[in-house]
Amino acid sequence: MAVQDDERERELVRMFNLAWDPAHQRSGVDALLDVELEGATFRFEIEVKSTTGDTVSTARDVGMEHIQRWRRMLFVIGFYSKEARRPELKRCLCLTPTDMEPWIASVESKILVDFKIAARASRKLDLADLFDVCGEQSSYSLADAKRLHKQQWTTAEYEAALDTMEGNRPRISQLKMLEILKLRSRYISERGATLNNPHVTKTHLLPFFGTDRELVGNAWAASIRKLAAEFVRTHPSHPAASRL
Image (cartoon, rainbow, N blue to C red; front, side):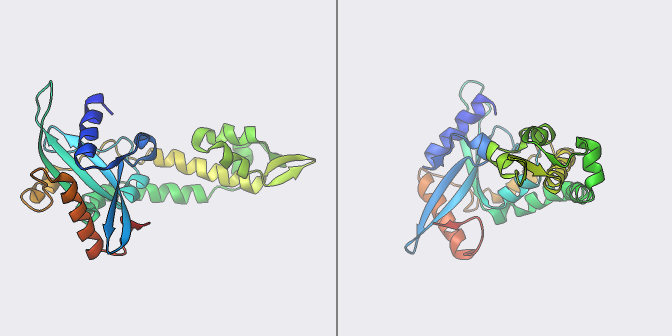
């Protein structure tokens, strides 16, 4: 993310009194919003975006994980002036998952077939494929697994794969190693199925201006909380609002 984009989005977080996640680029969640409603607390994950144009950029390598995450999020979108030195906030939209669903579904439709192919292809791998890729062994070491799946797992996840013993040494069985091979195959295939930075289009955004989704005035924090509370009332079982 460009420094200027990050600064604008931090400004939006402050204006809406959201809880900023410093590790947002790793976790995929920019900020959090807690809303009190009828004695209960509901937490929303927030996607914070800013733009100096009519469309909104999203992310590189957008795949099914992005789709699933976006369907659980509120979107805060700030529209800024194009002044080079200090862009000023001109307008702001706050959109619910149901508001965003038509656009999210359009992105999903472009990648879903490739992701289904990736899943089916990886499931068809067998022990003969494992032996061809990793060599035929009675069991495998952590080093073998890391050479195959690289940095896609944490240390704890690799250690959890040690499901057999050879002498007094923990090892990875053939069947467990085959599972890791299938995961690796699916990961490689899915990387080729992603979209690079699909934009939220002007056509999708324009109808929300002039409605209660366009937040105006100075009551930014109160406005987004009112909108979130109304979303909970209307969609009490929606996964976007997790009850604490």
